[in-house]
Image (cartoon, rainbow, N blue to C red):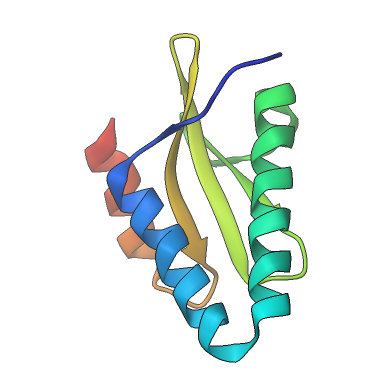
Length: 102
């Protein structure tokens, strides 16, 4: 399916924080992180039901090779990305973000 994701501003900020952190480590790792995130987003767009629920109404996909997850939901015909979440962050903060975003 050829559609574009809808990024919530806070999810875009999450992504930029990850890119900035990896940017301080290594340009090659940063490029790989961006490629893997892009690949996961494409997989989500191709088949949004492929990934498990994180909480009712929201699904998540692992960013392979990195400690990140992409949390998203289908809203009408759109796929909305709500978080690019580092796995070490507080899960309750993520859950509150998703619940408030409904």
